[in-house]
Image 1 (cartoon, rainbow, N blue to C red):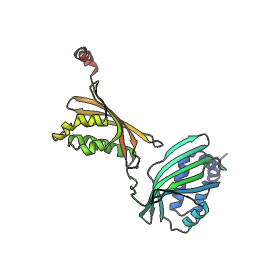
Image 2: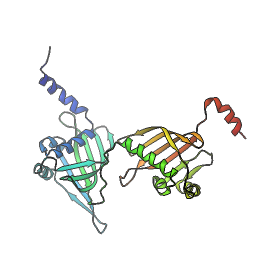
Image 3: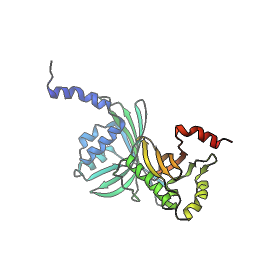
Image 4: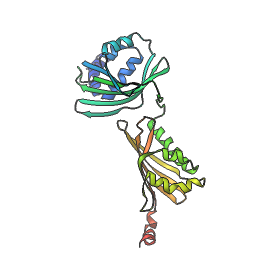
Length: 287
């Protein structure tokens, strides 16, 4: 028996809706907001949904205000399509059963100009009529500046460019760029067994090399990037062309607290030894 196309769509729609994750709900509300479509937006809110804002006053004190979903919808309904655009830097998601928490740093653009920025903290529950995720609560922060524009490149492309710039900084003896790319509590592990350095120790070791105008030139000939879009961490491994020959490097990164890209928390450099030469290597290095 064949069903008309519209009947199949009606039959399948609840199933597809139920399969969507919390991040799909968050994306949907901002898509509908851009379109000034409050009817489409409203289905993603729980009937008991609430809204709060947390603002830091000029004197350093905290102001907590209670918002209204209804007033928010009224403001959106009165706007032109495309006038309101909330852009997310990323979404960090945690899920336990039918409860989810999402952390979304954002930039709010009004009529093509940055208006303010901050972070949304979402609480969602999976209890909609078709089993979909709905928003139970939003708390946001807001500030006028400085607001970092949302990157247009993918996280993997950004990490790849970050890695290239870090190695280039060493080749050009740009110690500021090189060490600013590392977290304050970063660890660097070199090729020698004793080279397990804090950032401060690594800086002390490297300072004479940077001072002479050229530290070291490592060029990646192969790189693999791993990124979890729901977390704050990423890592890469790479094959490097160096003055020591082929080396392997592995970096662990985390997002900067100010949302301005990444920082290196851990880097390990190791010399590669071809399998057919490992016996000679053992003889060379044994005590």
